[in-house]
Amino acid sequence: MLMVETINIDKRLRESSRIHEVDLKNIAFGRVYSDHMFCADYKDGKWQNFTIQPYEYLKFTPGAAVLHYAQSIFEGLKAYRADNGDILVFRPEMNFKRLNISAERMCIPTLPEEIFMGGLVELLKTDRHWVPDAPGTSLYIRPYIFATDEYIGIRPSDQYKFIIFTCPVGAYYSKPVKVKIETHYTRAAEGGTGFAKAAGNYAASLYPAKLAQQRGYDQLIWTDGKTHEYIEESGTMNVMFIIDDTLITPSTGDSVLKGITRDSILTLARSWGMKVEERKLSVKEVISAIREKRLVEAFGTGTAATIAHIELISHNDEEFVLPKSHEGSFSNRIANTLNDIKTGKAEDPYNWIMSI
Image (tube, rainbow, N blue to C red; front, side, top):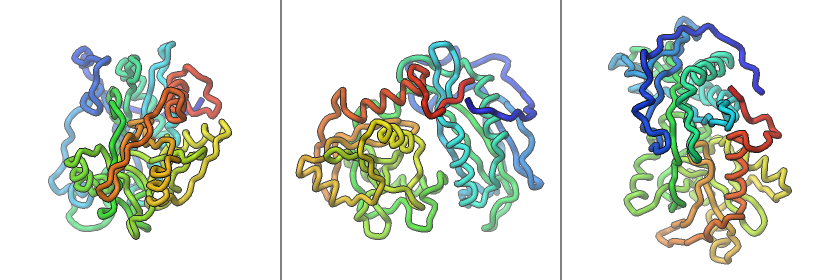
């Protein structure tokens, strides 16, 4: 169990909860928010003003730096309800580390561990009744930092705000997805911010994704920005392919996000004795494997989706229908194993769970 150093947090709580307004057994993803949020401010060279307060509108100036220069980063993780009522959080220390990696790249002050973890734990204790217990549900947790200087000029802000809020969620994808391999637009380039969870990365991806959705695809598979010959990741996920008897996923780097679900799956696959390769993976190799019927399955991995089965891949206006994922397939086995660990139904051999 992760040990969390305490910090002094002021509390301003709602007089009554809004939870009676919500059907926790029928929740849309990212539409319903819990009662409270944790906030901290960075000013005068240090993080301060730790509060838990009602989830409410923020007030800031039209000159706020974040609105003009997108100096903003975020994370996403989940908490689950165990059968004994405990709240189980999956690998929060990895999100903390990745948040600070993003912060360094975006010239944002790094966050001390006791603030991230202490604020997270106290917020979950405060709103523990918001963690749903229906199958397939969880509490999504969104920590983020953004610049708050009132200054129109391109330089790092001197002041920032850190917030954690939560929302009960159901499944991100309710069915297998159709994806298009993108060969024109670029999500990230070498030397850029692709490895960071920077808000601007996602804004830049919206237009190409919109074009794909207009043609009936759920997501894009992004390729390298230089040649468009190598697969990198999907819009909301890392991607994995089983070709013959080997699990293959693109290597991470400065243009591919180091997914926490990705790392968890690779760890489990290796422990099961499966062949695993993290390497450059060409579009040509994937399409050839599909044509030769050597591609067993393809799926996306991420916090929101966990596992998203890919049922169709489009490349250069040619569509390829993939084999359907059966009950005993690797992706279903890994999804069930991760779910059992996250909800306390299975052993946690890697100490991935923080229990509250």
